[in-house]
Amino acid sequence: MWGEDCYEGKSVLSPSSASKFCLAFTDLVINWVKSIPEEIIPNILIRLPIKSLIKFTSVCKSWRSTIKDPSFIRTHLTRTHNFNDQNATHLLLLHTVSSEGTFNQKGRLSIVGFNEDPYSLHYDNSACNQYCKVEFPIGLKQTMENLCFRVAGSCDGLVLLADDLGHYAYNFVIWNPSIRKYVTLPKPFVRFSTHGRYDGSVGLGYDAIGNDYKVVRLTRLLDQPNEGATTLVQVYSLAKGTWGMLRALPPCIVPGCLFTAPFVNGALHWLAMRWMIDRFSCFVVAFDVGNGSHREIMFPDFQQGRVLISGRLEMRLSVSGDGKSIALFVRCKTQSHCFLDIWVMKEYCVEKSWTKLMILTPQGPNRSLPDAVCFRRTGDVVLILEDSRELVSLDIVNKQFKILGISGGEVCSVDSYEESLVLLDRKDAVSY
Image (cartoon, rainbow, N blue to C red; front, side, top):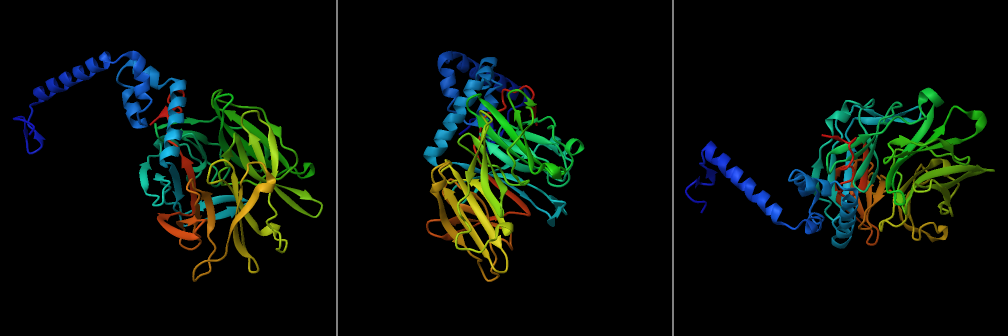
């Protein structure tokens, strides 16, 4: 069916004939491009997927300029959000660290017997099937001081990487795997050499007012016993490429955290506590990335009807299933208490709206207690089994578990992800 130049699907064109054919085809494409009215080209391009747009930056200078324009990048992201909402085609970014184990040394989590740490994208559907594997930049591997990075946050297709699984290190990277670009942040002001020991945590959010992506870093100083609990805040602006000045939060303890800080309603959220006469009071610190203000959101009374067990609780924050508020996982595993409570704040910043959705108790013949990772857009909760380290999805409504067939490794993160062109217009972004 292909004519005399093809036989059994194989081209028999001579090199010179193939070269002439390619030139003729290229001329045909160029002439077709020139025939399209310029005013409708952006409307066509805005409907195309990321991979096609990256290729089309090489078609001509005008297309390249259009695709790399900041307003085009923002509009394309908005269309992606809307399309995924309407068609339930959201993605999950999965990062798992395979190793022999982990250990805490002086309050810092370290990896033992590191093997690999693959990244992959999965559909946020019932099957959670793989969308694609993600290639990690080889150049970043050469800058690490620890064995691997961890995912510290995700926003609009950008992934915040932190080199803090082990000893103190100051490599922070904003990475867009969809377009294979990344920006390495300058070192922050608080370091071991300047402030001594500290607990640190970082988060990534979008400043809608300033159209800027910002990294917020909280550091609790540990070598200042006479000054109480000092927690410093520093904000990095991607638009400016610099860290802002340090300032202190009101006295409170923000534990160093290897979990992501949920970004909801323009604010990043961290667990915090403060000593109140005879016990610790737990709350959420919400930091607005736009105006730099913060507020405190009190926790629900998760100890109601239970013996005081504050010191034995493991807590983790998550974005709620609808993406409009925050959720809280409270886990306790002692000889006398073993449970996992799942809470959600149904109305953001309305403390009375905290609602306990479920109480999980030890499961299976070994009576193991799973650990909660995050909420999904489907409303299910991702759990990691204690013994096998497998990931399962829990249907809150039907109270049913589904094994996802994915190993969670020793360290695991699961984050919502949207493909985007963000960073495509930046000259300081490294391509790989």
